[in-house]
Image (tube, rainbow, N blue to C red):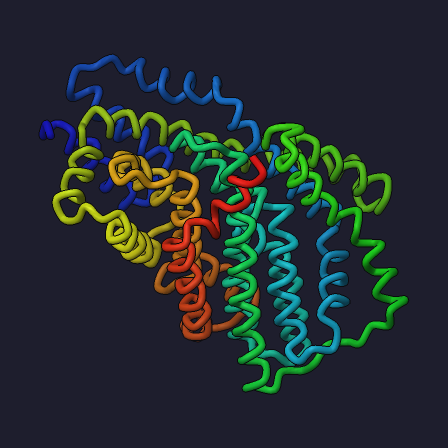
Length: 427
């Protein structure tokens, strides 16, 4: 590898160490390469803008974000919370179960772990504290369950993975269904164990009539996820078109059926979505350019050659990837892992003949475990701030949950059909 390619990498590391946003860090890193090499700086604009604007997939990102913001603005989360409570009933540790179930339901409306932890997390933590649950456990289970959001469709992380890797968005979204349910099941098993051990309070008993009334009220909102998944299953529309249809549907039910969304709230949702989308799309643009510089440097090929010299077995390679990503997730945010590390791995993935859809799920679950793992675990920071619980104790509570999620990750890594069954069958 030409030593000149070390310059953008050094610039990137230094700027990130100075807390510059990752998107700007990648842009300046690319700029430093073209300045030093005497290349055409216009290539930065070309790679960032042209390659992004010709991509139909990228439109799905603001649509998924907008759909989640409309649901939040329309206070649909309160309806989903009541529905989850009705589903769990009198089971011991009911609100902890509700926390897990609600995250899976909300995942089908937001696709964001941070939105889950900071949005419905407030409702969940306050309800659990009021019912007598330990503050640290309430925050920890909220952080752990929020990891389901970016795995279950619609998932912003999977859309970005598709943008960078060239994988099919529809296949990736469908591939996330079974892993998300497995993660939910693993966390529910832990809730069952810990609720019995600590004698957490049982839930409220609902009569069949009450359950039907609550379900009927929640059904229109639950149909949001169904509309998106059925459109993908049947091939009626793409993920982007499905996002548009689901967004329109969310507006209609929030304004006309639930009557919790007015024009003022809708406009606020539009503005919030624009800001959030701009941030993510800027990251994608910068990642496109940085991936181009990485490809020019041959660093990705160098890494692939090194790994192939270590082992030719793809399962050993996947074990190495899991360890590396888990370690990175413990000390770094998800964004640099996704936008910087993924382009470096793409050549290796092809060399080992690993299915991109399968790898997308492995990569995403890995980064989600990192989001709730000490010492960085941003989801634990968010939930502990909401619940006013000591971060150290929240990390101690979340560790067994992270271990269960790692077990799920291992199963997903070595049993590819868990991820590939739905896309292979439906598409």
